[in-house]
Image (tube, rainbow, N blue to C red; front, side, top):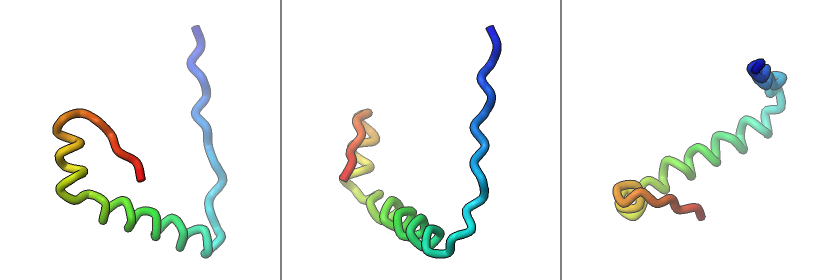
Length: 48
């Protein structure tokens, strides 16, 4: 069985896209409060 080739994406050069990714990353970090810690401990995920 042959291994699949890894997907290589082109670099992101659009500054607006970088800003959007930064906002999403910040939102993800800020969502890591007590509720997310509890969900992590019991083994379930939560999306919002």
